Image (cartoon, rainbow, N blue to C red):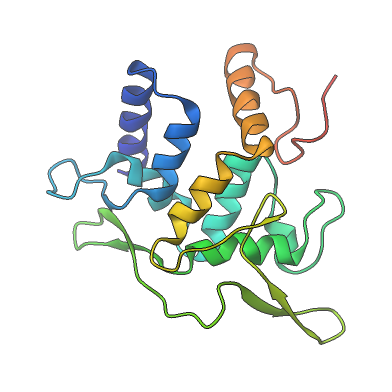
Length: 193
Protein backbone atom coordinates (compact mmCIF):
# COMPACT_ATOMS: atom_id res chain seq x y z
CA UNK A 1 0.00 0.00 0.00
CA UNK A 2 2.87 2.42 0.81
CA UNK A 3 4.42 1.86 -2.59
CA UNK A 4 1.16 2.46 -4.46
CA UNK A 5 0.52 5.66 -2.53
CA UNK A 6 4.06 6.87 -3.20
CA UNK A 7 3.80 6.03 -6.91
CA UNK A 8 0.50 7.93 -7.09
CA UNK A 9 2.06 10.97 -5.41
CA UNK A 10 5.13 10.93 -7.68
CA UNK A 11 3.12 10.50 -10.88
CA UNK A 12 0.84 13.38 -9.98
CA UNK A 13 3.80 15.55 -8.95
CA UNK A 14 5.67 14.90 -12.21
CA UNK A 15 2.49 15.49 -14.23
CA UNK A 16 2.03 18.84 -12.44
CA UNK A 17 5.73 19.62 -13.17
CA UNK A 18 6.42 20.11 -9.49
CA UNK A 19 10.10 20.94 -8.79
CA UNK A 20 12.16 18.05 -7.33
CA UNK A 21 13.09 20.06 -4.23
CA UNK A 22 9.39 20.62 -3.49
CA UNK A 23 8.70 16.90 -3.96
CA UNK A 24 11.55 16.03 -1.59
CA UNK A 25 10.24 18.51 1.00
CA UNK A 26 6.74 17.02 0.83
CA UNK A 27 8.04 13.45 1.14
CA UNK A 28 10.10 14.29 4.23
CA UNK A 29 7.38 16.25 6.03
CA UNK A 30 4.34 14.13 5.11
CA UNK A 31 2.00 12.81 7.77
CA UNK A 32 -1.21 10.89 7.31
CA UNK A 33 -2.53 7.59 6.00
CA UNK A 34 -1.56 5.80 2.80
CA UNK A 35 -5.13 4.47 2.53
CA UNK A 36 -6.99 6.40 -0.20
CA UNK A 37 -10.26 5.82 1.68
CA UNK A 38 -8.99 7.45 4.87
CA UNK A 39 -9.89 11.03 5.81
CA UNK A 40 -6.22 11.75 6.56
CA UNK A 41 -5.06 10.29 3.20
CA UNK A 42 -1.69 11.66 2.12
CA UNK A 43 0.04 9.64 -0.60
CA UNK A 44 3.36 11.42 0.10
CA UNK A 45 3.39 9.61 3.48
CA UNK A 46 4.15 6.44 1.50
CA UNK A 47 7.82 7.37 1.45
CA UNK A 48 8.29 7.48 5.24
CA UNK A 49 5.88 4.56 5.72
CA UNK A 50 8.12 2.42 3.55
CA UNK A 51 11.43 3.87 4.79
CA UNK A 52 11.64 1.87 8.00
CA UNK A 53 10.27 1.37 11.48
CA UNK A 54 12.93 3.18 13.51
CA UNK A 55 14.61 6.59 13.38
CA UNK A 56 17.83 4.84 12.33
CA UNK A 57 16.22 2.95 9.43
CA UNK A 58 14.47 6.09 8.21
CA UNK A 59 17.73 8.08 8.41
CA UNK A 60 19.51 5.43 6.32
CA UNK A 61 16.78 5.55 3.66
CA UNK A 62 16.73 9.36 3.62
CA UNK A 63 20.51 9.51 3.29
CA UNK A 64 20.51 7.02 0.43
CA UNK A 65 17.55 8.68 -1.33
CA UNK A 66 18.21 12.39 -0.87
CA UNK A 67 21.93 12.67 -0.17
CA UNK A 68 23.16 9.85 -2.39
CA UNK A 69 25.17 8.42 0.48
CA UNK A 70 25.11 5.04 2.21
CA UNK A 71 24.93 5.62 5.95
CA UNK A 72 24.35 2.17 7.51
CA UNK A 73 27.98 1.37 8.41
CA UNK A 74 28.35 4.67 10.27
CA UNK A 75 25.87 3.46 12.89
CA UNK A 76 28.66 1.52 14.59
CA UNK A 77 31.85 3.19 13.35
CA UNK A 78 33.10 5.99 11.16
CA UNK A 79 33.11 4.80 7.56
CA UNK A 80 35.98 6.27 5.51
CA UNK A 81 34.73 4.60 2.30
CA UNK A 82 31.57 6.71 2.34
CA UNK A 83 33.04 9.60 4.36
CA UNK A 84 30.42 9.17 7.11
CA UNK A 85 30.87 9.31 10.87
CA UNK A 86 28.71 8.18 13.77
CA UNK A 87 27.94 11.86 14.32
CA UNK A 88 26.58 12.06 10.75
CA UNK A 89 24.47 8.97 11.35
CA UNK A 90 22.96 10.02 14.66
CA UNK A 91 22.79 13.67 13.59
CA UNK A 92 20.41 12.64 10.81
CA UNK A 93 18.53 10.06 12.90
CA UNK A 94 17.70 12.70 15.53
CA UNK A 95 15.23 14.31 13.10
CA UNK A 96 13.14 11.10 13.08
CA UNK A 97 13.00 10.28 16.81
CA UNK A 98 9.35 11.32 17.00
CA UNK A 99 8.32 9.88 13.64
CA UNK A 100 5.85 7.07 14.12
CA UNK A 101 4.69 4.63 11.48
CA UNK A 102 1.73 2.74 12.88
CA UNK A 103 -0.40 0.16 11.16
CA UNK A 104 -4.08 -0.10 11.78
CA UNK A 105 -5.81 -3.46 12.08
CA UNK A 106 -6.08 -3.47 8.28
CA UNK A 107 -2.30 -3.17 8.01
CA UNK A 108 -2.46 0.27 6.38
CA UNK A 109 0.35 2.61 7.44
CA UNK A 110 -0.23 5.94 9.14
CA UNK A 111 2.68 8.35 9.58
CA UNK A 112 2.59 10.82 12.47
CA UNK A 113 4.92 12.93 14.55
CA UNK A 114 5.06 12.56 18.32
CA UNK A 115 6.43 15.60 20.12
CA UNK A 116 9.50 14.69 22.14
CA UNK A 117 10.67 16.80 25.05
CA UNK A 118 14.39 17.28 24.62
CA UNK A 119 17.06 18.79 26.80
CA UNK A 120 19.35 18.76 23.76
CA UNK A 121 18.30 18.41 20.15
CA UNK A 122 20.97 15.84 19.22
CA UNK A 123 21.97 12.42 20.51
CA UNK A 124 24.85 11.04 22.54
CA UNK A 125 26.82 7.95 21.63
CA UNK A 126 29.82 6.16 23.07
CA UNK A 127 32.95 6.25 20.92
CA UNK A 128 35.52 3.44 20.62
CA UNK A 129 37.38 4.79 23.68
CA UNK A 130 34.23 4.70 25.83
CA UNK A 131 33.77 8.48 25.88
CA UNK A 132 30.33 10.05 25.46
CA UNK A 133 30.17 12.08 22.25
CA UNK A 134 27.38 14.48 21.33
CA UNK A 135 25.96 14.29 17.79
CA UNK A 136 24.12 17.51 16.96
CA UNK A 137 21.39 17.52 14.30
CA UNK A 138 23.31 17.29 11.00
CA UNK A 139 22.40 17.40 7.32
CA UNK A 140 25.19 16.65 4.84
CA UNK A 141 27.78 17.44 7.50
CA UNK A 142 26.25 20.80 8.50
CA UNK A 143 24.69 21.64 11.87
CA UNK A 144 20.99 22.41 11.65
CA UNK A 145 18.71 24.24 14.07
CA UNK A 146 16.14 21.57 14.89
CA UNK A 147 12.68 22.83 15.81
CA UNK A 148 11.42 20.24 18.35
CA UNK A 149 7.82 21.02 17.34
CA UNK A 150 8.52 20.04 13.71
CA UNK A 151 11.92 18.34 13.32
CA UNK A 152 11.23 16.89 9.87
CA UNK A 153 10.47 20.36 8.49
CA UNK A 154 13.79 21.59 9.93
CA UNK A 155 15.49 18.72 8.11
CA UNK A 156 13.64 19.22 4.83
CA UNK A 157 14.29 22.98 4.77
CA UNK A 158 18.04 22.39 5.09
CA UNK A 159 18.29 19.24 2.99
CA UNK A 160 16.73 20.69 -0.16
CA UNK A 161 19.33 23.49 -0.09
CA UNK A 162 22.20 20.99 0.08
CA UNK A 163 24.46 20.48 -2.94
CA UNK A 164 24.49 16.78 -2.11
CA UNK A 165 20.71 16.63 -2.44
CA UNK A 166 20.87 18.39 -5.82
CA UNK A 167 23.60 15.97 -6.96
CA UNK A 168 21.55 12.96 -5.82
CA UNK A 169 18.48 14.20 -7.71
CA UNK A 170 20.47 14.77 -10.91
CA UNK A 171 21.86 11.26 -10.49
CA UNK A 172 18.33 9.79 -10.19
CA UNK A 173 17.15 11.50 -13.37
CA UNK A 174 20.30 10.56 -15.29
CA UNK A 175 20.01 6.94 -14.20
CA UNK A 176 16.33 6.83 -15.18
CA UNK A 177 17.07 8.20 -18.67
CA UNK A 178 20.36 6.47 -19.48
CA UNK A 179 20.24 3.36 -17.30
CA UNK A 180 23.27 4.27 -15.19
CA UNK A 181 24.02 7.11 -12.83
CA UNK A 182 26.78 9.68 -12.97
CA UNK A 183 27.95 8.17 -9.70
CA UNK A 184 27.43 4.85 -7.97
CA UNK A 185 24.70 4.72 -5.35
CA UNK A 186 26.14 5.57 -1.96
CA UNK A 187 29.15 7.35 -3.47
CA UNK A 188 27.60 10.49 -4.91
CA UNK A 189 30.86 12.41 -4.70
CA UNK A 190 32.74 9.86 -6.84
CA UNK A 191 32.17 10.16 -10.59
CA UNK A 192 31.74 7.05 -12.73
CA UNK A 193 33.48 7.19 -16.11
